[in-house]
Image (cartoon, rainbow, N blue to C red; front, side, top):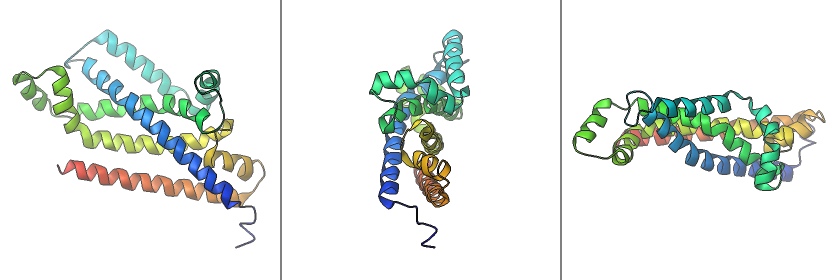
Length: 221
């Protein structure tokens, strides 16, 4: 067993794990901050909703669909000039976060839109009857009612970001994915590949467990 792990540098593994967590945390934060309002806007401007605007919805939906359809590996490469302009580098944690955000935000926005569509229309109509403004309806009725669905969507997005973060290793994005590619794949160090994959699996399981607990908690309120 010791011979199998002969190529493992646990300091490198620890640093790569920390880089992965930093990429996940930073990109998830910006994805939630950007994706939530975009998802709300998609819902509000869609047909038969409070701010129904077919042109606005069609344009926004088109942009979201375009970004969602681009394979993430291609997006990583295409965004290198923009990433360098924004962060000053295309490598490491800083270089990985912009494409992670651009790749995951449209995905999360669609999940938010779907969660809002599942809210009982009677709640919206009752809130309107009490004279609430659109902002009040969104903040006091729509979002609270859709919160379990939005949290579930956030969990799915976080897990997707883990896989995206691993893929960012293709362009030197750092983290466990970069370690797996440089050592596990390019240098045929199977033990490095096994350890990095196991750590990613554990991270995904922890995220899913946390997300499930949050959904159950807010569903009971």
